[in-house]
Image 1 (cartoon, rainbow, N blue to C red):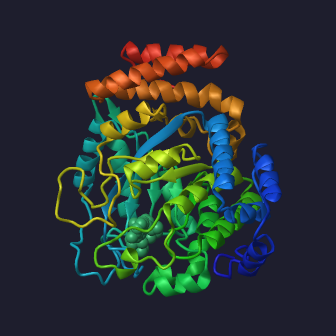
Image 2 (cartoon, rainbow, N blue to C red; image 1 turned 90 degrees about the horizontal axis):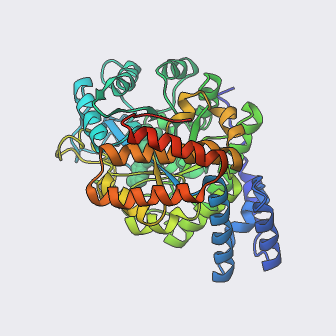
Image 3 (tube, rainbow, N blue to C red; image 1 turned 180 degrees about the vertical axis):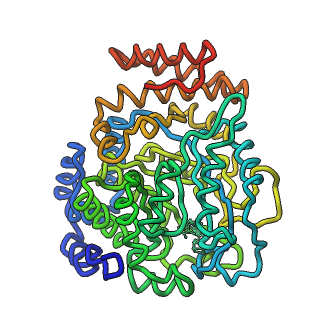
Length: 463
Ligand code: SAM
Ligand code: SF4
């Protein structure tokens, strides 16, 4: 099955849906926004309608609706993580990426397990609890075992106040058997971006190596789920092709996973193409996505799949990130480096692409907390087995308030107590008190109890 054409990505249907829903009037757009407020998700047609919005007044209505859905479901939480690039060796030729095989302008490096442990120590000392492990598509002589060992190394590093509690992974697609090995290492989410769902564009920008095979990639999350990994993440690289097409294709992918496995993706990432060493394409994306369209994409996704996390990375600038949190983002990276070994020292190894937000974690935390968002380092769900469908069942507004909100506050308090600068502590403690004061019932009791336990010196408390 996984070798044949993935007919669930139906390009003709996408174009027809876009064509038959173009130029919707204000009444039609408002009808879709009303439906979105029920928080049950949107159809392909609905998404097509919303992608047509350009009038500033309707755009404001879209953003307000997205903000309403985000705050109802997620409250003010923002989950924090850091990428950990373990290797930039790669056998593929993705024209937009600095790691592509023929690029001679970067130094190649695969970190040793000792070096990975040192990188992790630096991240733990900054206060991180979640890592996204990333690698190019070519491993040292150990093959996949290198990735498996690396996950184990990350979990194995312990320091006085911490350890990494969830390792998500973004590496090249694997076979079902290989995915089973990855699952056995206790990973959190396996994520992979299709880059573009448009087959012709896909072929044009992937000109060498295994990644040329569109079908191998587009079926990869089926294989991961078949292997028992039930938290998977999708994404496209915005800038490669028409974002309207990509959004409808993502919906088709999501619908397919829901149909086959009873649960859709856990997260959607929204990377926009950034300049990369020696890549003309990365400096001049064929379909650049403007800032306003980027915000529109996030808002529409929030409405289309309300219970799926949306991840925004440090590819975006601090300003852009600030302007987009309110529209539906639930996870952000912070203090990131995309060059292997880059946390321990500012080495000469080139990163994968240029970053828009270079601020250290403490500064990002202070900034988001000053905006009223609660930085969360919570990893409770995955550690209590609340993944896949179990997580989606829990992810109803009321239940989230009973678990995620108290856990966000206790994990934030743990960060403040163990890692933050005095300025951040001041902003953060005030925010925690304000949030507790606004809670009531069981959620408030739980939050007060958990935060008190952290104040008394306990780490890693959650419900
Ligand atoms: N090598 C594996 C792969 O390609 O799937 C996994 C890791 S790859 C380093 C992670 C992601 O980085 C890619 O899926 C791609 O979307 C993104 N990326 C590559 N070049 C980029 C660029 N110039 N700007 C922004 N993101 C980029
Ligand atoms: Fe290699 Fe991934 Fe970069 Fe493509 S995107 S060149 S597969 S690291």
